[in-house]
Image (cartoon, rainbow, N blue to C red; front, side):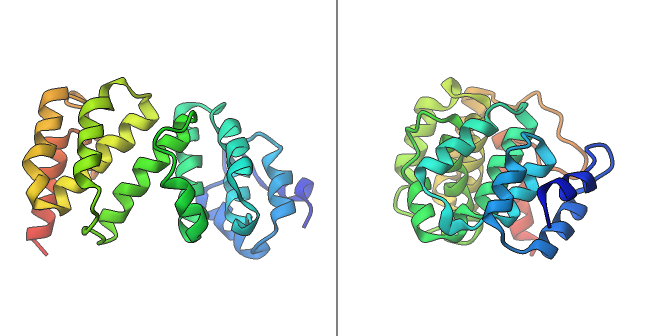
Length: 211
């Protein structure tokens, strides 16, 4: 299947995520094709490209380029693409996970986002025995309000996951939300948990109790 033929199937107004997944399922893995689709600079083709990439072809230099390209998208698109890259590629390879764990101080905001998002992911996946929680919370308390929006959300989300899953840190995580006021005025979409930490943690902990 050639890139031009695939691009003809994708319409930014009508193509849905399910359509992208269906095309990816037909292609399976084709890294060269993925890079051709990536060069279109368009959001939906780049979503598809991420799904059919070969994770063995990814290294720090290539990820640097991908992140630089993604940074040019509007905020909603760039956070979706970088999180999509983590979920579908980076989190599935030990060497790529090691890269993510080294990105706390990366010059790329999107790589810093993934450092934090991966820490949150560990906790919601049940790995709550992490030894770096104290360190992470200290870093969040110190740097949260000075970070870029895409990184700020991931840091806040990490504090939310710590507060949900690690009871001994719950009060501290709630205090971060109260002290910063971050997302306090945000109106959450229907059926979504608010990002404001006191509300997020209250709602998510209640879900645990209702199991």
